[in-house]
Length: 297
Image (cartoon, rainbow, N blue to C red):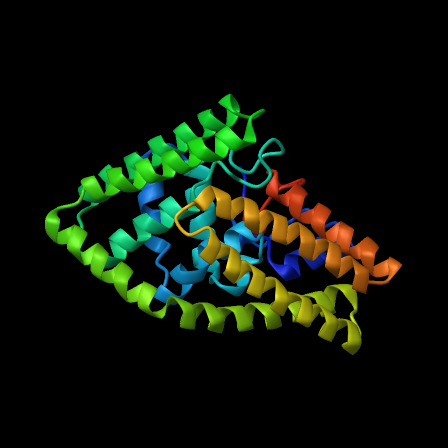
């Protein structure tokens, strides 16, 4: 079972104690192929409009989603990923490209806009998502040696999924969805700015605790994060409408941030930093002995 939401405290525990146990509150419920498990998890994964506005960005920047989601939401997301795309966070696909977070968020928007939907209607949507995730994994295998074509194919698959989901809605349900999307878009920048400030402080506090930063280092890293999120905002605007191009841009920004951070750290802190990254990769790749609840993606 692969999981992708490793909290900062859990990373610290892993780094300093190499503990292979994990808090049961974050263990996903038993996974399975029947839709009852998936339906319950999707119903429980009920996000606020603030959370919806930033989760996709945080996921692709490999940030700690425990700063955004509560334990039940983390648990539900892990269960959804286990059932929708169980091979999306393996060593062969460490960034989880087989999992379409945008598709899941679109489904959550549909359900939030239409709270009276029946379970039968929800299952139709779930089956569309499951099929799309199977298609994505097949595309990743087929075009694993051609990243540019793969990005185009994944983009097309995502767009096809959204069309299929919309096509399964009644005119009234579709209008409700469009009204909710318009409401979120109108306040997205305000919400994003609020969460960005919270993410920066959460991250600096976590790094200070784990790496033992002094005040000068903490402030230097805070300024790096401020510049990083400004670049993220620009990348989002530049790549609007092309999710795969945006994912590539965010990955490049994430790598640049990693390089910049290491320039601020001492040799001892760099060793801890590398252990943190290794811990996240190992937890992400599955299994209680080296995989578990890991940071987004």
